[in-house]
Length: 92
Image: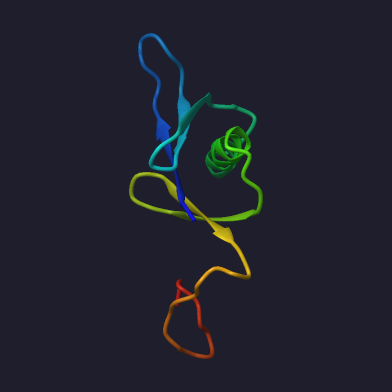
């Protein structure tokens, strides 16, 4: 199972703002949709890559220093974490 990373690319002298999604092998780049906020544009790019690769499932996104990372929510995915206040997830 692969993760998807999304990144914002600011405008240049030639092109407007863009968002890209990358899975390590494949990439899509979309022009920013000014009617959406930043998180929604990141999500839109991740979904465009999913569509390009014919992937299905639910994505869970989180912010990083350089953009966002998206992973699939799957009942068959291995879970890691530590128990703290009853929480057992990778985010704990």
